[in-house]
Length: 342
Image 1: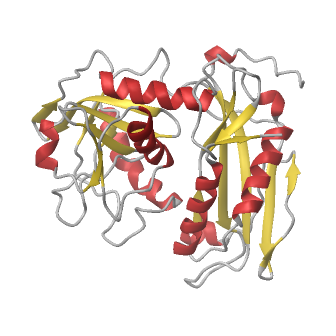
Image 2: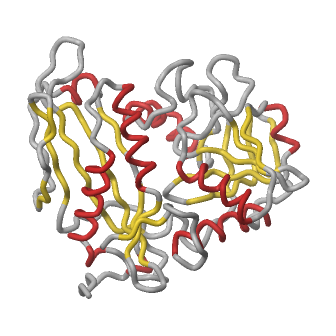
């Protein structure tokens, strides 16, 4: 058993801390090299690198957990690998093969085993795979060379002291263009969301709820999470759109709702004017799992959910407890969900 780092795990925030190893692989002359672990956490690239000139980059996010039995596991990493491949296709970048992606995740987590927080600490090892165009590109075209890397860093729970309902707002901005890149995890999507999120934070809101860019009559997602709704009769509703990122957490919640909680699930376009009729609302993603929403502001109008601003709604709490129980190994997982690091 590897001795853990001397860290006060319970006081960790959600931030970057340099660990022992990262993983790096380079694409050149039409193929990926074998890839290797590295202790060098700096990147040297040409001043004219494709990523610096034309923002050719994408990324993923997943976590490694310690289970009750002391095993180190990751949660559905094959879906992260496939989603990154989909991002690469859209951005004219070479796909990093799914099997090599999974091997790289295993290697880098195992090499940083001492940094994986212990069971019960509330902390996890955050895993950030990313890829970028690395050679000089001055004309507008895809790069010829790329670098794929994975960094890991221990993080505390996204919400200190447990999840409390947050308030969000409907912004004056769009997150993605119709037929654009909203359905992939491109770095440029997040760059576009920074200005609206700073405005929202300055006004006291946790995030923005974006409406569809074409008509602004349907709910899409926030700057960093998919949205879920609970109907007054206890059904789960998830917005459907070609410009929503296919969240792995959201897809997992759907299975949990159907198979573990016996809920009816609807994945469909959600009109903004029906949001006021839902009983609960939540934001779902890797970092927070599910963050409950108590209130939505829209240019002077308010939507207050019956679940309120004090407590997590009962259905979202049940979904959260079940999914985190599966991730921690306390509840039996569907086949293939838990990937053990040997």
